[in-house]
Image 1 (cartoon, rainbow, N blue to C red):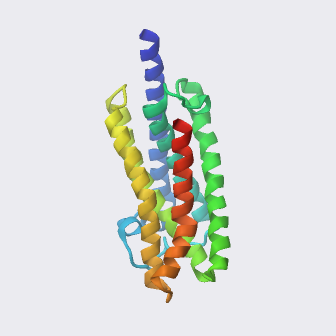
Image 2 (tube, rainbow, N blue to C red):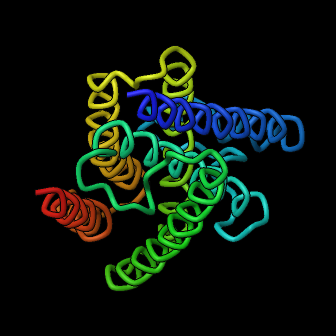
Length: 235
């Protein structure tokens, strides 16, 4: 019992330190890139269905600023995934590489997962690029990718703040709150597809069915396949 409490305490301490590092990184980003930060971290990136021409939306996908904020998004998602996984499945078939129970290894686990997630973001870009060319939507490829990263960054920051409060407040993470966070994550990823669909519909003179088919190919279908694979791995 004492050992279990010590392991939980080390895991909690690790999440607190990672959360503080991330929040400090956001603060530094706000100071170093004030215009880009305010252009990206804005409610319209998550809730605006109409295309807005501003600094945050007009970044090139491989500009230094966008590469940086894409990495920040992946760092935040890495924290969220580790938190949820350890809160719900730590003692039930969670791969050892994801189990946070030693403070010294937690940073390495967080950064390792970040690298994997950041690579997957650019694999997603290749998917968008391939289907964008197939659907003859060359002008939408960069905008789709930038909108996807911007919406994700805003949402992951909100989740990060929520989970940081959870980790500060209790040594044992409340399972219902973590389940709620997981459900919100799943809903968000489908909502993100709908968000991009609405923006493309308002921007491009294509039919609803045409745009919906493109969004299914690039957003909804890969997400559904990924969720099915994750669920099957936990059964």
